[in-house]
Amino acid sequence: MEDSLLARAPLFDGLTAQEQAEAVRRLGSRRVRCPRGTFLWRQGEVPAGVGLVLQGSFHLVREDVWGRRRILETLSPGDCFGEAYACLPGTPLEVGVFAAAEAEALLLRLSPQAGAGAAWQARLMQNLARVLAAKNLTLTRKIQYLSQRSLREKLLAYLSAQAMGAASPEFDIPFGRQQLADYLCCDRSALCRQLSLLKKEGLIRFRKNRFQLLADARPEDF
Image (cartoon, rainbow, N blue to C red; front, side):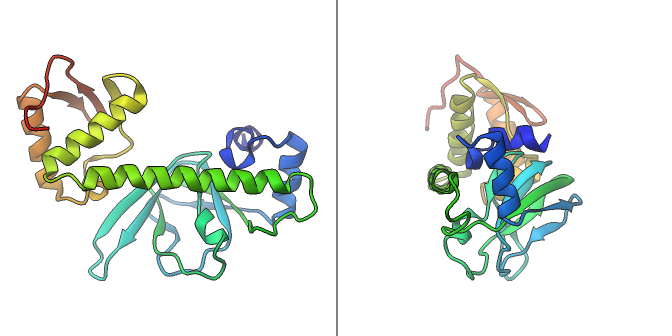
């Protein structure tokens, strides 16, 4: 499974199976299992390399001094985390890496000097730059949701983006209700009320994490 996942992971794009195996060996990799609800890395720690999700899912979360948690990103198999800190060695994490389900990750000691002299080194660094650029776009999209004036508009912006990404009015989202509230920085009860209102207005249908935007409906104030 790990070999096939590496072949699909953006970080290893363009590397042959032999180069992938050599890279994993030379980068001092190790596998880490995390039970659901535990932290792989906590906010304030100095990360021990770059992580690649092998199984399950992780959330990148940020907590304030009162323990309130906000989800910044959801990570699935093949996704990387900690890549920005590989370019800034010794910098403490401003986010935590939290296992949303029982999960496993591959940790790699990746840096601009990693694999120096190897034929795959330049390609790996190019891939790292692409991963960083993609993460920047993801954060930009979230800023677009959070910059909306009301919770209703945040929800509609988020659901619209998910439908466009799926190229279908029906789609699944990667969050439960509390996780979606954390992601959109709002109260869970207020989120559930707003979802019920949107459903009553005939704008959406939903069952658990499955949503549908109704084609004939159009929000008047969005």
